[in-house]
Length: 198
Image 1 (cartoon, one colour):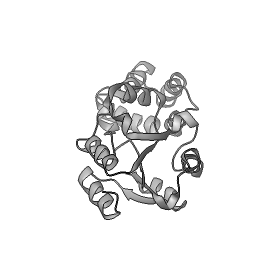
Image 2 (cartoon, helix red, strand yellow):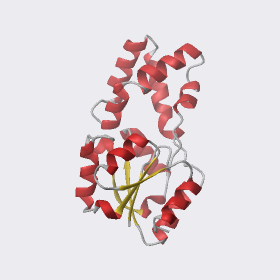
Image 3 (tube, rainbow, N blue to C red):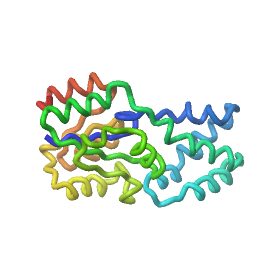
Image 4 (cartoon, one colour):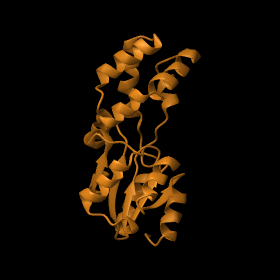
């Protein structure tokens, strides 16, 4: 079986409110950053790789009235905040050892992915994968799923996609890909076992 993993809140913890709180003390400023930077379309364009960080910072500062320096500091803190979820790397190795082919499909800023590649050593479990900022496509757009399937010659019925967000799973299911919504490693492992992957 082909088993495809998302990264954010599947392999790596993504907790934007904690990252924001490390830079912005004021509650109203934290809410502004969450709504008008991380929750803004510009964040998706960073994921897509179509907006450079400097421009994103400039635009966010103009939009919110907050200092560009602090927004830049926030963006710098995002990559190292992506710590591995306890139990997820071990799950990767168990799924691989059971004879499956592993891939990844994730929306991820360029700087974050570059950091993760330097910081972790489990990349050898993957046959390959697709990162949004490297292909200029993002989930849940259909094109990124089609690209994954085509790039690696994956048969949808023989492929399981694991993501934490229902909207991304629904988009994968449109291709006939089987799906698991990730809550925590133990639950994911049980569902993979039920599918015959373990």
